[in-house]
Length: 184
Length: 181
Ligand code: SF4
Image (cartoon, each protein chain N blue to C red):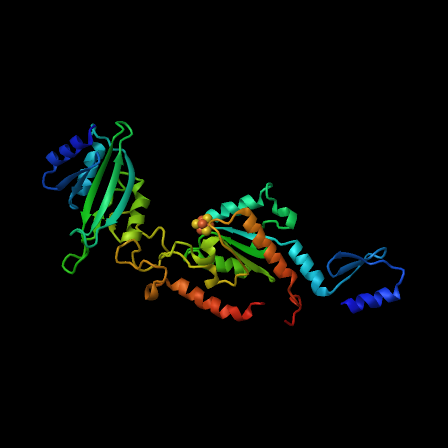
């Protein structure tokens, strides 16, 4: 199916939630609001004409200083049966004092089981929480790591200063002490 | 040392001492070697250098290539071991992340002395281009490194050159066998 007509169908069905249809070099994506995102994704999965049974990738984007809802979660979908691609972008904003639960999306692990680790990675590197996820832990960074490294306000260099991982700091200290026992 | 040699040579005039390695002589017929103890110890050490493999990234592939029959590390007496308890030197081949660093250090601590460390590749030497939150900028931050081999990755020739440099270093050691060091 033509991706533009898929986008059109979604817009017709969920006129309030679809914020924008973006086309760039023949790649079409829809930007949708967070609250009914899961419903729209389930619709894409279960509708016979779309049948997006494969979640190719799920990733996060940080638009710090470029856009107002700062984060986006991007779902890249593919249908094995109809062989068409589609992209859904869900806008997520930062946590604030009055809305402490802003930075979260509903999990899609019950639609696509493969989303499990993708969501964990997205949580690990951006801090986006996935509500209802069966096991939301860090997946790449050590479990006691502080901060979310792929955010734009995270230090760029290896020297993290005070934010350095405690175990690494201990290691450097230990190897300084161990130096005196080395046979050189 | 030459004094000892000449003393023995004057006493046993008819014996012909054959030099099998610089500073190591053999007395034919009696199965005896004459050398400084340092020499013998170092000789046996550098002739059977068993490295612990620690391939962490793309450099590990180059290390395996060097071990293959085309380049053949066995001819230097270098045979890869899978256990730190049996290893003499630790070859760190690849990018060391902060999460991996404590494990590298633990493997090093498990190795019996004497032990040596080779940092293979730009990543292990300096962190390479990966000056990011997750990468250690050079394993010398937490390990005493003997030989640095630059390159991304170093060619097998360069890697072998580094190993030979380490052998030369071991050959020039003094008194590294005593309890009272
Ligand atoms: S030095 Fe180059 S080849 Fe070696 S691990 Fe680093 S990036 Fe890979």
